[in-house]
Image 1 (cartoon, rainbow, N blue to C red):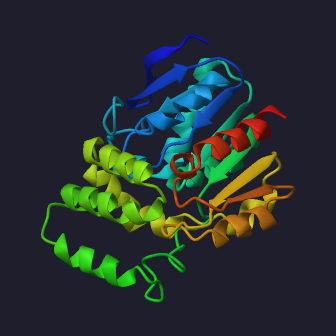
Image 2 (cartoon, one colour):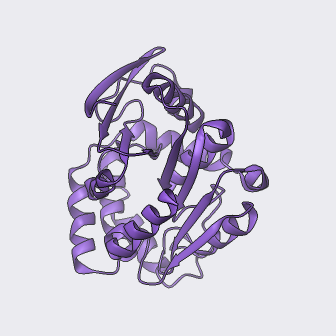
Length: 277
């Protein structure tokens, strides 16, 4: 498989994807809420041991536009991922997704089980109703700051409001100054699709719920949680590991929502060991 940056026609649009590294194929499942699939350059270290495959959802990064509103949803993203796998001639690949990328990874695995070699879900949840135990929960210590921030940015345009919200709130989801600097840099520079985000909030949060289907996952699965995650409660990682048959749970005690920023050596070692053995 050639390394590089490519464009794949898919029905009424096109998908920009990249291939880097050598070894067993590993797809980094993107989120569907409005950003491209390449912003986490810190994941490039995985290309030292795997063939790393990333793609931009329609309407983000180098991919083509969305032609129908429903194409913003995870089901279309799953179809595009499967089209990419077929195009690349990959029989089976491993899938890793973090946060809402975990939603993509779970839905792809459930839809195309025979094509999933292994599954890694990081700091995610099996439902869009995951607010309990997070900064959106009135019982959480960060809730007053969340409310204050929401009021401060209320009058901004949607895309700028979401960008500033993410830059501010994610500062509480990492544990080191270096990680905070990385979060600020990435969310300041990443282009953002406001229509995708609006669809995610109005449609996907209500639609997405795979809790009753986790027992159907029949591939080796690694669930990674961050003990200090304030965006998605680590209890959801425990729940997923309990419900997916044979799943392994790794709770990273020094991490928030982004373990590869807080504990990079431990995170990459854990992922590599799981995928290689």
